[in-house]
Amino acid sequence: MTRVTRRADTPHVKLIVAIVHHEDAGTLVDALLDKEFRATRLHSSGGFLKQSNATIVVGVEDADVDEVMGIVRANCVSRTQVVNPMPPIMEPGEFFMPYPLEVEVGGATVFVLPVERFERL
Ligand code: 2BA
Image (cartoon, rainbow, N blue to C red; front, side, top):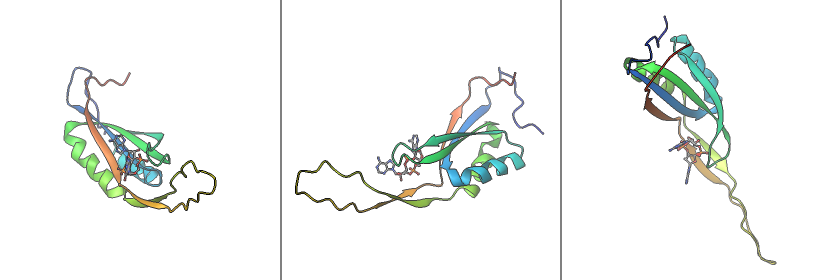
């Protein structure tokens, strides 16, 4: 069964863009494929932590958005990551003790976008 079969003139398709932890990306893509959703995995990195994450792109019919969101929720867990702050520019004789900071990284950051046109050529 192919989930997205509409022609270009049908407006009922959404693009789900999910930014997830790179450790969750493989199982998420496998779970999507198990349910016959087509997905693309892009290598990305967070602007704040500057660590690698993954962006999963899924084109689906409107009726399937909630199912895909459920699959994302079931396969992505939030984590605490440690960040070492950049040392400030120091004057001679000054001392800086870099304390690591803990940051909570969500299970997934998800955007659902309307698709104006969808075609598989
Ligand atoms: P990063 O930008 O590396 O952010 C990682 C985590 O650091 C964030 O987790 C958040 O807890 C924290 N953080 C981010 N910016 C911050 C700031 N200005 N001040 C304090 N803490 C900050 P999440 O919110 O779960 O985001 C995870 C990843 O999702 C982000 O990685 C980024 O790649 C993406 N993301 C999150 N919100 C986004 C948005 N509005 N637009 C585009 N990408 C977004």
